[in-house]
Length: 333
Image (tube, rainbow, N blue to C red; front, side, top):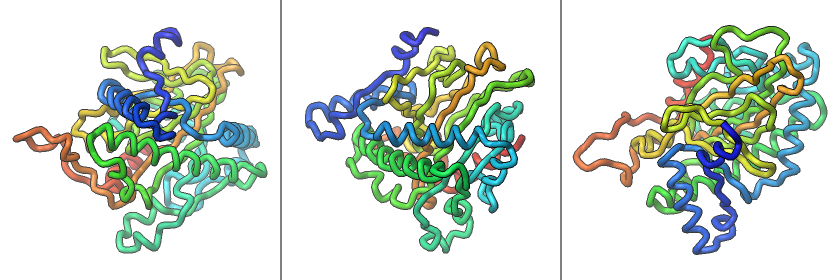
C-alpha cells in the first residue's frame, strides 16, 4: 500500500489547538480523536509539543549503544527480576505469544526504562507491585545515552497526560478524569533496534509479531526504513503507517479497550520484514512509550460506555495485574 493510502487509513491530527486551549479548535481535536479511537485505534499526531531535539538525541544515543560490541551491551542487562528493564538481546522476546500464538521470537534488540520516579514506598502494601517500580538498569555507555533516554521518557510522560485529557473529553468524562490514575504510573519506554540480518529468518518470524499493546496508550517515534509498522485495518488488510518528520504515532492499548467496553479499539499491529533483510539500508529504529497507569488503578468499564441492561464485556482487574499477565506471556519463547 502506498504511503498516501496509508495516511488516509490512519488519520493525522493536529492537536496543537487543544494544547493552546483554543475553544473551537479544542472541540474539533476531541471529535477527530474520538473518531479515530472508535474506528481504528491508531492516529498520527503533530504539533504535540515534544521538542524535536529531545527525540533526535534519544535516537542518536541509543543507536550508538546498539553499535557497541555485544559484550558491552550485555553489561546493561537487568540486574534484578523486573522483566522490562535494561538491555534485552536480539530475538529474546516474542510479542505474538501474548495472544497465545506460537511464533518465533522477534527480530530486534531493545533497551527498556521503567518509571524515573521512585514510588516503591507508596506501594509497599502491595508486594506484587515491587517489580513494576523496580529501579532502572541504565546503559553505562556511551556517555549521554542514559540521560537522553530519561529526557525522552519525561517528554512522553507529559504528552501522555495531555492525550489522556483529550481521551477523557472524547469519552464524555471530565477532562481531569485520568489525573489521579496516572500520578504514580509505571509506564515503560523502549528503544528498539531492527538490524539488517546475516541469515534468513525462521518461517513466520517478523521484526515484531502481530500483537496488541498492553497498557492504556502507546506513543511511538520511528525511523522510515523499509520494513515498518503495519496495522490490521477493519476490512482485514495490513496497512503501513507513515509518520512525517515531527509527527508521532499513537495507538490504544488493551486497557482502554477494557475501560470502554470495546467501543474503542486496541488494534493488532506488527513490524514487517523488508524485502531484503540483509540490506544494510533496512536497519530500523523505533522508540515507544507505553502508558501504564498507577499499579492499583481499577480497569473496569466506564459508566459512559456501559450498555443498558448488559454486563460489561470484561471483568474488573487492576492495571498491575493486567500488565503482569501480558509480560509473562511475552517471555514464553
